[in-house]
Amino acid sequence: MHGFFVLLNMIGGLGLFLYGMHQMSDGLRRRAGDRLRKLLQTLTSNRVFGVITGASVTTIIQSSSATTILLVSLVNASLMTLEQAIGVVMGANIGTTFTAWIVSLLGFKFKITSLALPAVAVALPFFFSRIPKRREWSEILLGFGILFMGLSVMKESVPDISKHPEALEFVQHLVNAGFWSVLLFILLGTLLTIVVQSSSAAMAITLTMAYSGWIDFEIAAAIVLGENIGTTITAFLASLGMSPNAKRTARVHMVFNIVGVAWMLAVYQPFLQMVDQIVPGGVNDPHALPVHLAAFHTLFNLANTTLLIGFVPQLARLARVMVRPREHGPAPIGTFHVSHVRTRTTDALEADLVSARAEVGRMAVMVHDMLLKGLNAYHSSPAELEELREESKRTEKLTDQMQDGITEFLTDCMKESVTELQAQRIFAMQKVTSELESIADSAYRLVQLFRRKVRKGMGFHEHADEQLYAYTSEILDFLKYNADYLTYSVPEYNFDTALRLNRALKKTRKGLRKNVNEEIASTPDADVGGEVLFIDLVRHLERIGERNLNIAQAIQRLNENAF
Image (cartoon, rainbow, N blue to C red):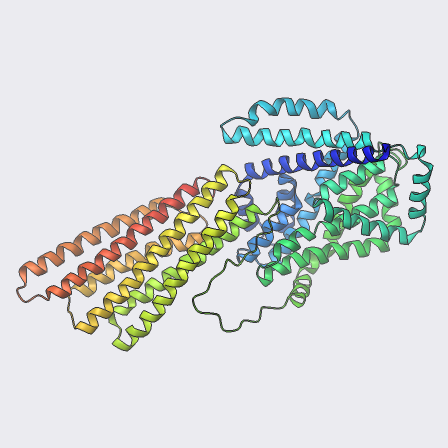
């Protein structure tokens, strides 16, 4: 019965550690916001920068899973290439070792409660603040405190193995099988990380067991190697349902870590001896052993990156062999689904929002192309107009489906624990999709009006062609500017440019209305029906211009929150 309560205490301590790690990592991600996505996109021009960026981002947010999931999502949205992503993956492996250093230096060198409880006490009052920045910093500090409280519980719960001869005999039986023991504990480390879904938590368990004397340096290092393999499962699951390149990124992460473990086994004992010589204190000293393991973790990942950074093209080719391109049959007309499957892990929400924005950008490009074709229908033949009308009708129905699909996806995201800024991004993307769908409706209506003009032989006033061309060109420029930002084709959104485009639209629109009124008043034989249809055209174009401005305003609101 006593053993059962010891197990419960250990699990409870692990739960506190996991919750604290999640709270601290979540707070760090909220503080960093979309800047991490921009950092990953902009500072990966070569492999070395990619490694540095991956290590920096992972150190900042204290979660290699969050980095790799975001990375996979960026590749899925075609915002990064596979080769760029590989360098970041290597860096993420290095950055995640920082957690082991924090835990080993603070968790086993000091009385943990002297750090944990004051951190909780300082953070608690600000946790209920209405100011987001204060609340986010309190989450970081609170998570830090709870994390070390959990580590303290785990340390105190692990019994002294010398007082349990049966357990000692069983452990010695497992660790005395030589090379097979190393392989066994690599497998156990992999399974442990998959079960707890956190390499940091698995590392904390390993450090605690080593500190308490249950496992020695050699076996603990083997578990650490297994944890490097197990941590790749999160990105693997996140990539399911994504593009082939996104899946390849996840496969490279797995292959990179497995290859690293494979070559490490060939030099295992000499490498352990080198670590022991570098790190002060002996491996038999329980206070020095956690630092030895942290050093082993870092040196292994540094060595693995140094060895394999020159083989990025080969790793990319291997990934392309492992994940073949999709076999594209004839695409069903008028069907749509969001090309991203939510993994519903704690680290995946930011990646979900990146994927959602990619879908919004795809919709914006589709609506722009639809409008361009619709406006070109002005000079089309009757047969061409019939064909274009059917195509526009299909596209309009597809945009309806896109709006429904993206809105449903974003609504599902809202069910998670979202930050205030993430909620604003979600609402703005829903607004943009609604406006884009309305533009598609107007574009379809324009094609119908052009078709009626041709069928009934209606005419416009003398300079109507030039006036329409000028007005529609400005509308297309405005929509193209919005679409370019939504698809990341332009790095920053200048709202002054959007306002300038809108002012030009208003000026041209006034001139159009004035010219039509003057034409009807001054020309007795003017085609009144044609001029009325012309006014109807202008009215729909006005609506498109207004929708463009609404999109610009939504983007501007989000720009303040790093959309």
